[in-house]
Amino acid sequence: MPFTTFFFDLDETLYPASSGLWQAIRERINLYLGERMGFTQAEIDVRREGYFREYGTTLRGLQANFPVDTEDYLAFVHAVPLERYIHPDPATRAMLTGLPGRKFIFTNADRAHAERVLKVVGLERLFDGILDVHVIAPYCKPMPGSFELALKAAGRPDPASCVLIDDQARITRAAREQGLFAVLMGKDGPSPDADAVIARLTDLPAALQLA
Image (tube, rainbow, N blue to C red; front, top):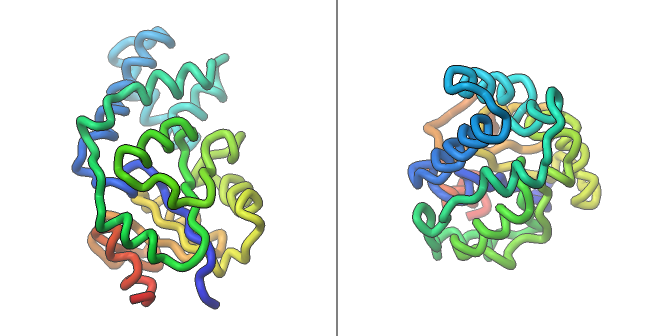
């Protein structure tokens, strides 16, 4: 079956993990946990990592345990000068432009952050939609419910015709379990958690035997 629908993760997939942007966001998450939630320095790492493992994201963990202003959290942790870390990538834009099929951003972040990132890396207006933390609520990747809602929002394509590209093995593993073709980004392959592994996003067409 030919691939018709592509779901791209955002952070550390559409730009290199080496950029340092996610580390800057993580620092903002730590700051939120300290300033907004009142956790001690000793508690911050334990809670952030614990929530990440149990709930999928720090936000979902906080929501499960405390009254949290979701919009305040998202605005706070993404208040990072993106231009300091990421830059336009003409090669990636050319690859995406030539990729046959519908393309979606599928992210645990929110639309506002996704739109900012796409603009800075020069990939705006290339995607058919942004499936963000609100679209897949109350779930997040890698929860099975997040994939069900993403497929619904994309028009219910056959999972066998869909490709998911993500930098986290736990998410590509979950995608495979839902019947999607899973591509692990930024790693050396092969991997038992993905159908294909690519070092750079521009390697995607070759990995899918489209070029």
